[in-house]
Structures are given as C-alpha cells and as structure tokens.
Length: 397
Image (cartoon, rainbow, N blue to C red; front, side, top):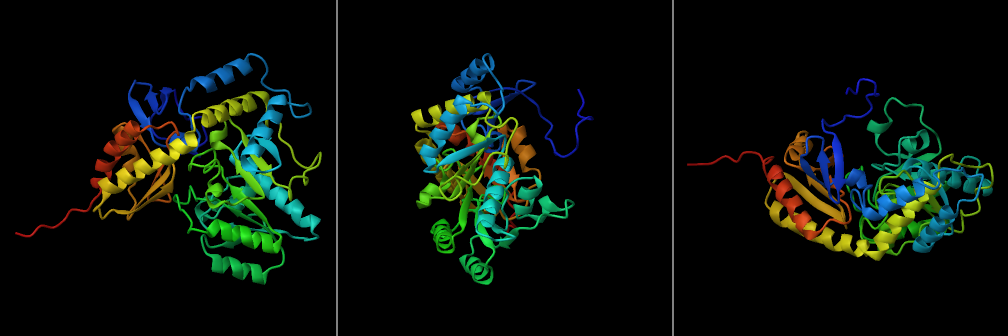
C-alpha cells in the first residue's frame, strides 16, 4: 500500500505498527519496541489496556454519538470528575488540545469585552506550543510553526519565557491585557521547566491586574508530572485549564475547564463542537480516570520518573554531548549540545521509540504504567546511543 494519496504534512518514519501491549509496540514484521514517547503523551495507560478496551467496545455497542443538542450523562459525569480534581467549576468538551485552547482564547476575549476592553490581549510565551489552528498557531511561540501562514491573528502579546521582569514591564505599559496563557512546562519547546515560584508569580500578577491565568496542561496534565495538573506542584489555581492527550488514552477528546471568573462566559450559540464530549469519548475518559486514580499512577509517575532521571544522570555523567537532564514525573528532556538528526531512527533500529524536539532535546513521554524494569531497559537502550554521539577525543603518546 502507498502513502501517495496522503498530504505531505508529516515526516513519517518508515514503520507501521500492528498492535501494542502495555509500554510495547509491535510492527508489521513482529519486531518489538519500547514506547518511550507514548503517542506524544497520549497513551498514559499504554496500549490495549483492558479497562479502556472494555469502555470503548461496550459503549460502541450501545451508543457512539447523539450531538450536544441533547443531554449526555457520561459528559456530565466526566465534567463533575474533572472539576472535582481541578477545583474549577465547569467544562466544555471538544476533540483535541488545539480546540480546547481555542475555547480558552475565546473565553479570554469574552472576558475582556465584558470589561469593556475593545481589543483584549493575551500574553503568550516565547517557545510555547498551543496548537496549529489559526488562533493557537498565533499563540504558539515559534516562527518555524507559523511561517507561511501569515497574516496571523491580532490579540497576542509575546513575552520571554520564565522572565518575570519582562512580564512586569508589559503589565506597566499596557492596559488592554486580559489573560496570561502558559504551559507549566514547555513540551514542544524542549521540556523546559520554569524557575521555582514562576507560576505562583504569574498567579499573583493576574490577581493584582484582574487577568485570567490560563494553564495549557494538554501535555503536562493527567498525572504526567506526578500531580493531576503540573500547576498543582506550585499550589497554583488557574482560572482556565485545558486538557486533551492522555484524557482519552488515544480516543480523541479535549476539554476547557473554567473557574468562577470564566465559568459563565459561554452562552448558547457562543461556542460548540459537533463531536465534542460524545458518549464514546466520555465513557472512555471516565475509564481512564478510574484506572489513573485506582492505581495511584500520579505517585507512580513521580517515583519512576525520579528513578529514570537519576539513572540517566548517573549513566550519562561525563558525556560532553549532554547539556542537561530535566523534567518532572514522566516528562523528561535530555538536552544535547548539538543536534543529532539520526538519533530517532537509530534508536528505532534498536527497538526504542523516542522523540527529539527543539532540534536537540530528547523528549521522553512514556506511558505512566512504565515500571522500574522498563525504565532500566530504556536507559540501557538509549545511553549507548547518546554515548556514540561523543566527539572523538585526541590521544597523546
């Protein structure tokens, strides 16, 4: 079969998978791979998890879609679960992270207009990634993603990441800002973890200015970093949170959760989604939450993530090619000093699936069910490949 009829918007790797089991994938020739990227943070419970399979097949045999012109009990149950977990008030359901962020941007603009701000502005960060729709692409902080899609939208003010002085300068100079939109840890930007207290400082500034704090937790949420939201590690309560990726373990679903300042902004006709929050997606997400909570996978992710980071640090110590190892829970970045364009394919040839983002950051986002033995295997596969990147050392006789 040929891919000639597919648009060329993906640089696809030359492998196709037949099935998966836990943290492992098997290609069409039967070769096994340790999945250290988890569908880009989607497969939090790994592949072919029994509870997820049962939820999908059971609900598919009963009802898949009715539309949001009717009540959907599973959607109401899921909203109640998510608001209880986050401390927020209500939820809008959609199909992806980009759609969840679109909803957040629209809420912020409605909030601004309610305050009689004619052209409300949202502060966004350099290096951020919020999606590929026109609004979320504009909010994204990389020219590489934006190039060729101009004119971009107005309504966004860019600020250097992790720079409170720059943020305070914007706050002093502008009176049209209504919100800050931020990833608690930048994922596509290179698994960049902010300085301690950064998120809390953003919360304080938003409170002082009457701005909304929007936390894009699409990659960091769902216990990925150890807590349900990464922002919880700083005891920060956002006004709006967006989730997707791990929420459905592969079934498309996203949500925009709002606190009291934004909870009543959407009225009938202001926003919608044909497929968003359908019975199949919501039943699946409920099953995912059941497993995550019953098996305490947040605490597990924190423990195994620490084990993995410490083991990597020990085994990579002394390699000049490695600049830094960073992350929280099972969201880990290994920054190299130079790009390694062949590393992904080399790792795949050795049975390991990884991702490189921001040109030279090895990003590890394995399923949260990863155990210490599998973490050890991950290190044993990856470390020698990084060591091979070391520049040859001159010897003297």
